[in-house]
Image 1: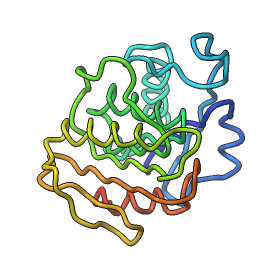
Image 2 (image 1 turned 180 degrees about the horizontal axis):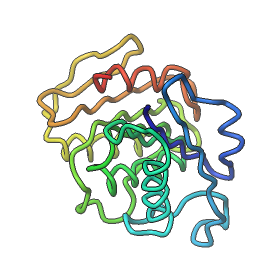
Image 3 (image 1 turned 90 degrees about the vertical axis):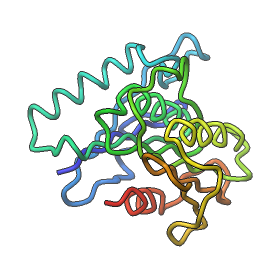
Length: 200
């Protein structure tokens, strides 16, 4: 059984995200609730400023608890998120990359804080719309370039899947980049593309 963490966007909640269930047979999807962040407008969200925040420590402890209590395959744990949750997914991917099978960030950015201490190369998919009015696509490009460098990829790429995405060449772990239309949103095919691109 695989485990997927999904981090909600600015002002959202795990409950609201769970109503749009990402779950499929053989998958446990966990929707944490972000807390009010005094450092950023007191909005409900995530402390993604570094790899050692209380939010990252909480996710680490939560992962340990879930692995101990449920028949989850420890080699099939993923981090995903949208908007501010995409930033958090990137930070979790950086902090826990040696424990994850992949990371997906939609309309986000990061990793946050010091990016020199990431645990390991990691399969990643970065999605960002060309016309995102809430989080400029340049943030997604920075994430893409961070992971492309971290994973030792070349600068050239080739198409992957059926949604206009590309995967970079000669990577230690796959880096998938999906530039799409649709504004500040999550395309319905995002996990399908990641799972197939990661080789699952």
